[in-house]
Image 1 (cartoon, helix red, strand yellow):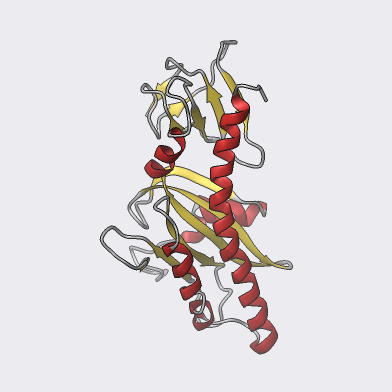
Image 2 (cartoon, rainbow, N blue to C red):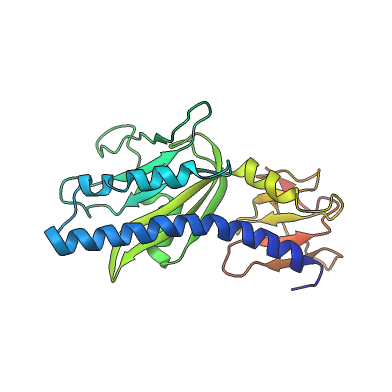
Length: 242
């Protein structure tokens, strides 16, 4: 990691870790609930999951605009009385309190929301590791342009589901680029090459970025335990496509 990139990488990593810290509170509370229910009455029900609601609402209400959604998405067929279940709440403009996300979980319905097949659910389930998806437009859920941070919720060997947070991609970018000098040419890309954030006028959030094929003055570093690479001195477009 080059000295020039190190401070920028630290700022970006710290911002991501702040989001994951909030997600971790939901994960740990969910594990505790699951284990209490199993110990006392066996297989959990939808009503048990509903007891997480005040906890999630309070934590979401305490956020300052970057985190716009928070909750638990339950593993399929975990519950005794409901094959699919989510306890997900989001901040809505003009609403004083968090609003529950309403999606169609009827498997035979044309509008069925198959969350188990989404990247933000399937990757943590398969890998056992935390994940960040996006930026993307959540056309089947919130309708916002977001980053979704998720972690697997495990009780021993039992996959309970995933805990996660939706982050406003524009707000996340604004907050971070305010930390950088205007001439540093900072760009962060995800594993698919999509721009997560940039303070370069020629690169906008969501553009596809390709690394230079030949050595240049551009410097880069892979963030530790995060799926992002930080590029610096990206003054001119190298490859850009939408």
